[in-house]
Image (cartoon, rainbow, N blue to C red):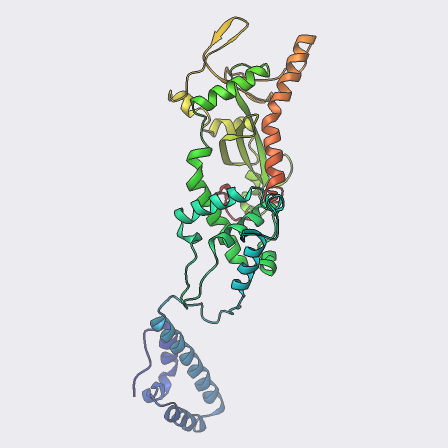
Length: 383
């Protein structure tokens, strides 16, 4: 007879509890029939309490044996023991999705695609191809039982649906045959890979050609030398730990996380700083922001403009009145006393709304920002 594996802690505990029984009692035969007969004989000769104890210990030892064998023989990682598996028909779901949006003659036209996914079909395909080349997560691969997983386009569609509509992850299981945990994984992988692939090209300071265009546009609006508007917005953090809420609760009475951004007239955001607690005001965020790092290190492009015959060589941003009186900020007149100040305040406030309009468009296109963030950490929300 082969002894039961003694490496499992559960089995060791069972053997210790069996110290009042003969050592041969905890030995298992290779034959199920012989094991059953020997166990039956032992049980018949015991008292009621000893019999119950014997049955309980044998059940624990059998369960430990099954788990030990599963850990040794599992080749591909396998499923979690005792985990319920739902056989979703992902192939049929992908076939239906492909027929609706990605076939040669799709069911829905380009206008419907753009309304539902917040971008053109050609841009979506480009993003998918970039993500598939960057991250193998968006490549369709077989799983441990050689069954093909979700297509990369399928994962991108699910991620964009959740970002665009802010739906609960579990609600996407009905229409897309994808579990809640997989949906959240798709969203996180999608966001992190988009940042890794496109951040250097788009979320960056403007180059010389773009800077000249921005300066020309703002000069035509009456603000020569202006390169953008700066402001902050708050995103409510629904999953904020209770112990942190005193730091993150702001003037609205709910925990939030602050986003600082600079936007131009065409709604391009070329600076974003996210993660400060909601109790911080715009000055606190500015103190921690890296918005002026390039200026301090001499990495900015040269700027030259004239105002009332005076030459200036430092660009500036339009800001509200809470920002400090620095040369890089042009603020409105809080209490204009004459028509000249009133005209300037009206023009400044109208042009400064570029960043406010950018925040509004961001909220309307991606409804997930309108709702309280349900992710557990600031790092997850920042992606």
